[in-house]
Image 1 (spheres, rainbow, N blue to C red):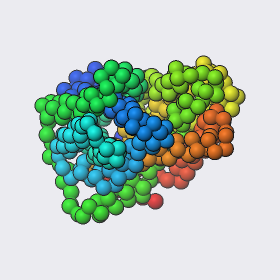
Image 2 (image 1 turned 45 degrees about the vertical axis):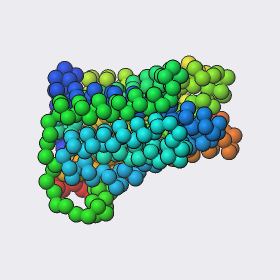
Image 3 (image 1 turned 180 degrees about the vertical axis):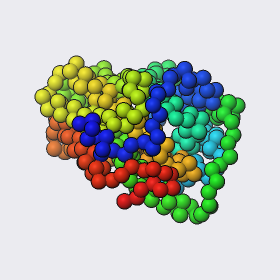
Image 4 (image 1 turned 135 degrees about the vertical axis):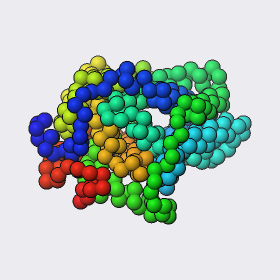
Length: 423
């Protein structure tokens, strides 16, 4: 199977033979600054999500409106990725990140104003999330400049592990903070994390000039970015491998009803939510430290298939403990995302690297939102047990992963940035 994947998936142009070390990555002062800024803002974002949910529910007492307010954070990713992602390559990338931080700081602070109407809160949340696309696109491209070679893959693993820990820990701490300090104070804490991020970037990260490229209209920039990621064989395959996350993480969207099906309560739901991210965090450490860079590329296909296929075990209606093991192992196998993400960023030409990443990441976020809503609708309308829906989602994801592996056999890998193969 590994040999099949080696032929099927696009290989890196010149994969480094030696894996980098965490010591090498954290020795870089600029990386440490970006990492600390990421950790602060991720945790703060979770405080804000909990706080906003509480505010909406306090005013409306409507679970539907509360859920829709939370779900609205997915759509802006598409808007930001399409219309703002080129800023990551048109302006100095550190400046884009600082500007996005300052904008989000002011918008989140405005959400904390007393008496803010509900529609205003939703619009402000939309604006905050829209600014995530240029920020993350610029950050990814800047990170590639700071950490060349395999150091980028390990640095990416550090960021994704930090995000997983920040999400889980932020949600847990967010509930306590909102309870003790009130929702508006939690929003102010989130606003302060963006200020801290901007200060770290300003003081510890060197300003680099924007990549040189021919300036065209905004619509032409958007079209060029979409054409790059969708028409370039190598980038398209790597991006679609990343989008498979929507299928093997669907249990998180159904955590509460799944726990109820198992006759458990909120604690079990929290464990179901955390199992996949925990397995993913462990998997990223193991994958990046024990597997050589060339082998990571060969293993991407089999791991993507297995991460989804493993969910078919849910058809046996396992108990809570076995379910948590299944989800954790699936998350462990999802560590292939580190290789796919790193290869995608390195394969994108530098003058569109930030835009390409933002489009791919925005598509993944939108895809997750759509799959989660569809899974919830299927479970609700058809009264299908969550275990069956999770297994079905895994089956669809596995089929798509196999298709990505098999369709790659007829294509050849990329050998130069200018000659990125298009299909």
